[in-house]
Amino acid sequence: MTRDGIALEADLLGKTYGGRSRGWALRGCGFALPAGRVCALVGPNGAGKSTLLALAAGLLRPTEGTIQAPPREHLAYVAQDKPLHPRLSVADTLRMGRELNPGRWDETAAQRVMADELDPHTLVRDLSGGQRTRVALALALGKRAELLLLDEPMADLDPLARHQLMGLLMADAAEHGTTVVLSSHILTELEGACDHLLLLHGGKIRLDGAVDDLLAAHTLLRGPVADLAPHTVVESRTTGRQLTALIRHEGPIEGPWDTQEPSLEDLLLAHLRTTPEGVPA
Ligand SMILES: Nc1ncnc2c1ncn2[C@@H]1O[C@H](COP(=O)(O)OP(=O)(O)OP(=O)(O)O)[C@@H](O)[C@H]1O
Image (cartoon, rainbow, N blue to C red; front, side, top):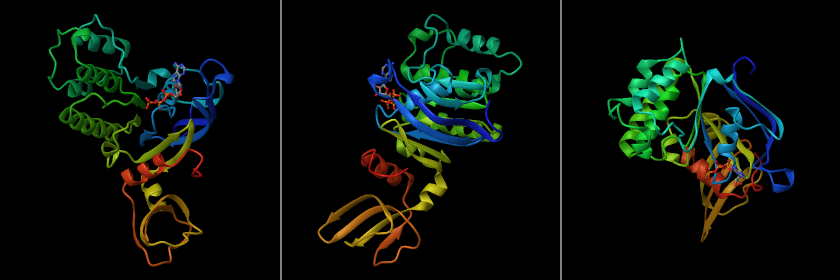
């Protein structure tokens, strides 16, 4: 069980596949995600995002540390490969969702995701990747879970379907106060949709917090090359005598620079481009 007001909490969480000597997929991860947040889980390939989501879903066990999530019947998990029963039809898949979640199943939410896009008689094995995603999301939303764990849910959707389903997901989460953790490589799709951020790099958490707080703590700065102390430089580039830098500011910024708050994409790209050891989280 999780603490009051916290939907997902990890403490010194570590996971290794095939023994400690084989290296760590995650190590020393700690965070407490407030309930009702829509959290973007971001990081390069191999950072540990799928591992973290599978641990949260209870499909993997930690090698060390703990992760606390709502019980299985109160969470929904959509894995990256959207595993569904290939021999069931779309209609039977949704019927199974209804029967496995008696008293809780939200048919309206599931049908909203389906949006009459698919023939209910089609077998799952005959669906395209994007169509399977739609069915998997319908099952997840129909379950009316407290916590939705979505591993790259939009990756194989066309731009229109992505836009429609992302909007629907956000509206549904806001209406029901659902906590969502959503991994994605599509940074533009996260801007405006997510209010919390977890950035994983090299199996460790590099950024964790409310998006607004993280953006307000950073500054994008342009101007003459100079020492940026006491600020923490996340990333800097110099062209001739011109400096462009993303800093985590320590107090007011005094100097001849143009400053602005970064976009979420600026912030993420700067942190993703730095080496895992480069920036204190
Ligand atoms: N079943 C497995 N057996 C062995 N190693 C694994 C297994 N699954 C993941 N790993 C390793 O764990 C690390 C984290 O992988 P994970 O899939 O969690 O990363 P990810 O951030 O989801 O990556 P991607 O963005 O490519 O989906 C990687 O080094 C990966 O090779």
